Image (cartoon, rainbow over all chains, first blue to last red; front, side):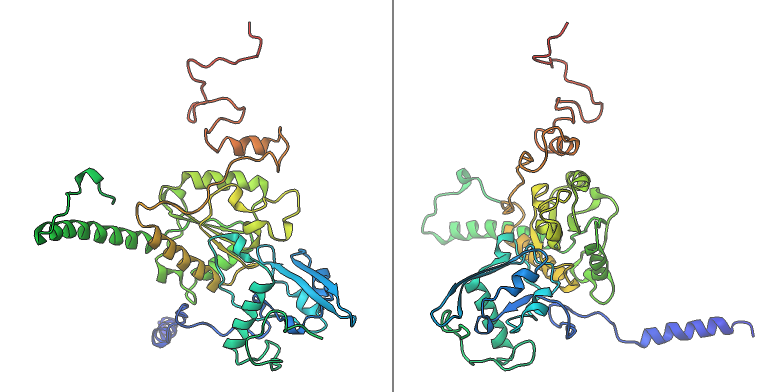
Length: 160
Length: 232
């Protein structure tokens, strides 16, 4: 029948007219992030043993770990720094870490005007991890509850 | 608009002069904010992508993220009509020359967003021979968006941060971003043709052979003499 195709096509158009808009009003609402999305890295000092497996797994070499042995044989993590200017968010360090001390799940909108702010040292990373835990009811990104449900001082958070 | 200090009358205690003074300033402040609002609500980017980050930039322009909500949807094919340059992707040394040239062709006021790790500092190629260690060596950058590639939300955050920066700077405020030095002696060999071309795009804009040629005709100035050449 002549015109059937046009009627069908118009039906599609009318259906699209009635459909709600797909736009996500970003600053006010956010899309749910997929569970395995590779967003910013969060480093939890209380889970870290200072084995530097993450630094060896990093293809860019953007993780710096400096440790000092304690008397009981464990390591004190003196420096832990991630260069987020260089990081390519491959999450190979997350796969490598045997203690899940470094995990994905951080904010993805850390835009800056000074690129050197993206070089994050240990106090800054601890601050970011605390922010993450406070926002997420003291539950790690992998679903486990946090060891200590308070703001951890820098040195007492060490893993033993 | 800053007022000429010579024009400011000495304030006396009478209410008249203070009100007159205030009304003058109020008009100028309002104009300033209106101009800044207009400028930051119609940031037209250059249609310009270098690598995989450009795909994410295109996704930002689609209806789900809709960069048009921020007035930045008109991707212009000509740098003359654009205000914003989104450097999306790996900037190789060979591409650095066109990037610098497109930036110079844009009309002031112009803004730059560096998108992704590659253009921020070189990303996974930072220690390589062929990739620029950060696009801020070639053009001044206002906002850095980390990611590999950044999510569309990250680019939108970068755009909003840039709008905040524009709001703070105002129409006549000083630009906070550092200018590149144009010194490539630590990165490229001295007789490298790309280095010569890049240096010709920095002040004092000498031509590729290092002589002060005219940009249109390539002619040397009338009073120019080659020194130390041992002429005829």
